[in-house]
Each structure stands twice: as structure tokens, then as C-alpha cells.
Length: 285
Ligand code: NAP
Picture 1 (tube, rainbow, N blue to C red):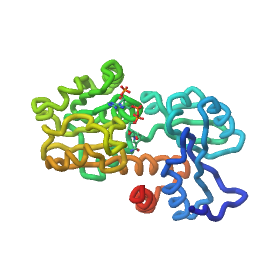
Picture 2: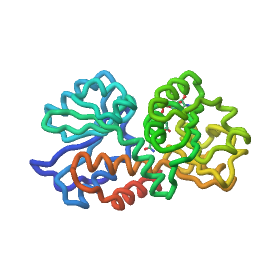
Picture 3: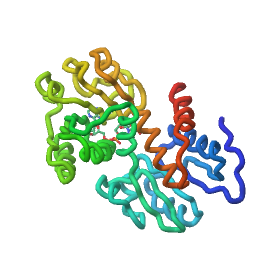
């Protein structure tokens, strides 16, 4: 158990709304960062049941909570409850961060930029590259928004073809070269020979006995393979065995948190301290 030290009468509260929420690693990285900079802030988890979301949002105002992260299942429903939603979060249709400025609640989405920062930190530049994204859910919407601004073309393959088609048409307003492709075809030699970066944005791999999102046979050393799941998944392991460069989702988790921290505090985040706090928890999961 970790004690949050030095709570005072003027401590500013941040936290996370989710249901469930007990699995979150965000308190570790944010509280470590507040301590590092000597900020009178704390970060706590709030278990918010779906039918209590509006009451919880009223509580943000009533209790002058500085800001919260929003996780499943609230990311989409919360957008209509805020005073302002920034352009990126509006386009994505989901909010993962709220900032409370004297009672005005503003929503942001830092997931897509967090993912791009994790790629950039790993020395991967998607500009001019051809990217395959597997999955068309909330995380794919956020990552797709940022990807489409840089990649030359983005292909989306998902279990529910209509969901992939909806995301393609939505992202088409940012990048004219967004296309849907069948899941099976997306794993073929012919298709993957024209792809540079592959991203798993499905939950497949959370469990060790999950099937791979696509067959890894056609993956090779010219591919960069990313997984939004923040551990070495079976898909990443299979890709690494084929010689591909692999990147897991822990960097995305870190960098989306760095961006939130800076929105709440106005201070530059101590990234290495946050990374250390996160990694110490990821290594024991
Ligand atoms: P989501 O909204 O539920 O979407 C999941 C997508 O994966 C959908 O396209 C879904 O297809 C597909 N899918 C689910 N189960 C599948 C299966 N058994 N076979 C094939 N496709 C399947 O979930 P999300 O919020 O986008 O999250 C996706 C992943 O990203 C999760 O593993 C989550 O942990 C991870 N994530 C990581 C971070 C980070 O910071 N690293 C942040 C956010 C999310 P259907 O439409 O057919 O259901």
C-alpha cells in the first residue's frame, strides 16, 4: 500500500472516473510526479457507476476538483456533460481528460498524441508511411486521428466490418488515403509487403491464450509492430520472432499521462519519474 503524503487543507485533487477502476496505474505515475515537483496535488481513483456519471460530474464542480481522467465506460458519454470539448476530443468523440477551470469543465483527449509521442520516443516517424490499424473501437479512433495527420495512408481492419467502415469515413476528413480492408486480407503477404507499421488496437493479447489479431506469417524485419496493450503480447512476441521491431502500449500510457499532468498543473512533467513509477507497477503485473 502506498501512502499519499502531505495532504493539506489546500491540496488540489485530481483522479480518474472509471467502472471498474481498481486496475488503474495512473495514481502511481501522477502522485510520483506531484511529489517530485513538490506540488500540493493528489490523484485518486473514483469508482463511478454508469448511471452516476452526471452526479459525479456535478461533484467535480461542487468540490472544486482540479481535473480527472476518464476511462471505460465513460469516455464517450461524458462529452455531452462538459462546458467545452477541444477540437481533437470533439473529432474523436471521446474525452480522456477533464480540466476544471473555476467551474468550467473542458474535455481533452490525449490518447492519440500519447501514442504518437511513444513512437517518436522510439525513433519511429510515420510521416510518409503506410500504416495498418487493427480494430475500430475507442482507442483506434483516438490513435487514428493522430495517425491520419502524418501517415501517407492508413488501412483499417476490424472484426465488425461496418465499424471499420464508419471509422474510415470519419477519418477520411483528415486524410484522403484512409481505406478499409478485410481482416484476413490484411494479414496476407501481398498486402503486408506494402505496409510499414502495424498497430493492434484490439484487446486481443490481454490474455495469453488469445488468438493473434492477424496471422504473423507475413510480418518481417521491415515492419514496425505496435500494440496498444501495455505489455509484450503474443502478437508482439510473434512479430519479434519474425524480425520486426516491436513497441508495446506502455509508452502510450505514459505519454497520455504526461500530457494530462501538464494540463492540470501547467508544469512540465517529470517524465522519467513517471516512467519509473509506471514501470515498477507494470513489472509486477
Ligand atoms: P473497444 O472500444 O472495445 O474496441 C475494441 C476493438 O477491437 C473493436 O474494433 C472490436 O471489434 C475489436 N475486438 C474486440 N474483441 C475482439 C476479438 N475477440 N477479435 C477481434 N476483434 C476484437 O476497446 P478500446 O477502448 O478501443 O481498447 C482497445 C485496446 O487498446 C485495449 O486492449 C485497451 O487496453 C488498449 N488501450 C491502451 C491504451 C494505452 O494507454 N496504452 C489506451 C486505451 C486503450 P468489435 O467492434 O467487433 O467488438
